[in-house]
Image: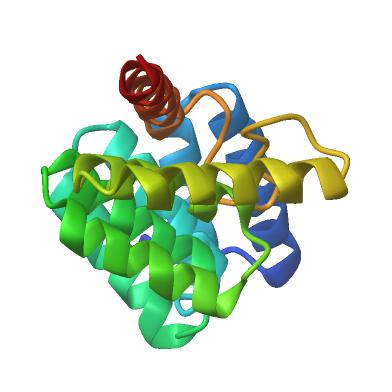
Length: 188
């Protein structure tokens, strides 16, 4: 009797794994989401959305280097994926490299000029670079886009790679708070 490897998931199973991963990410269950995405990628290894989301899971579980690889792979498959550029910018911002973060956010906005979260993130990068006027302008642009789209401030569309419970989300709000404090201090 010979033991066989389990058959890889089918396309429909991969879709089910994708949906499971999104739900797990929304609930902050990063390891479960990671496992589901790895299963989906076993069927469709070049799916840019899965690669990008796996990168987010890796960041959330402490594997920033692995996440960076996933975001870069997503961009190799889909060079116009704004979310992957924004996520690379988030990594650079957490590393303290605001100039590289700015460049990634600008690249994301070339791909999707209405990506409000990238405008928010760009605002944070500009703030860290000491370019307060640009930071305020980007924050206003993000708020305007959110208002036009009928979304609450800081809203990330359901298919973005910035789940509401993400540590990137927490970083985002801390940076926004810092920007607001800087603005208030300059007005005094």
